[in-house]
Length: 243
Image 1 (cartoon, rainbow, N blue to C red):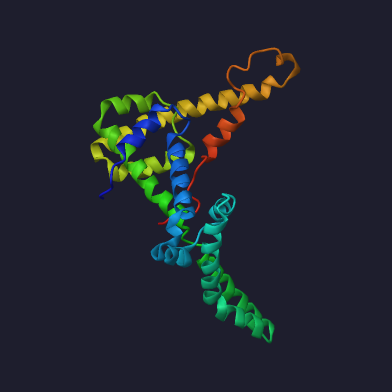
Image 2: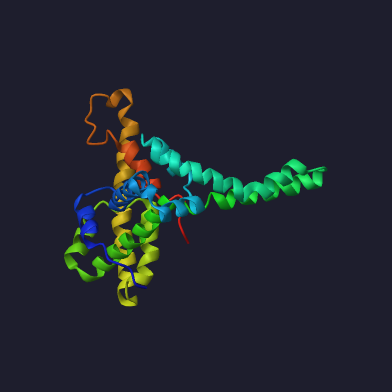
């Protein structure tokens, strides 16, 4: 498995002391991909061909649309809609020509199949997924290669559950068998400690709203509900990953 290492952004992410630095890195990856498709790249025929073929998931179409780059989005939408209409033309004609319930159901299924395939392969998700694989692999690699990184990771705040899962899966390919089990144990220990910390903070937040606790300190738990949700779900996930 040959993957380009991303040591600098991974080290920078770890040093940020974030609740999940992989989420932070994926936020940057998403921003970079969105900016790419809103910039001069849309004038490149190769880029337009990719957009026409794959397009974007709902989330990223909406992000592109909300970015106040009307010309770029209009250019992409113009040819993407034309390509979509061409791909769906047969299914639409079948819908229009259905003469009985059996034909109608068959036409609906055909149209649904076209639409489902059309909405797969988001270009932003694909770019994010490629970066994610490198970040995960690099995190595992640095843990096995650099004792200072291993120590810093153990003292960090862990990861969201989603990226924690993906790290465990990646480690089996990124690390030797002699290091793999130790990685699984130590990273899980760090994750559990931080899940307990987060749960404790969320619990205190629930108690802080009780009248008898109104005058007590928040103990840094003012944003515990947000951190709890982030820990459970992750803030920046690939919604249409390439497998």
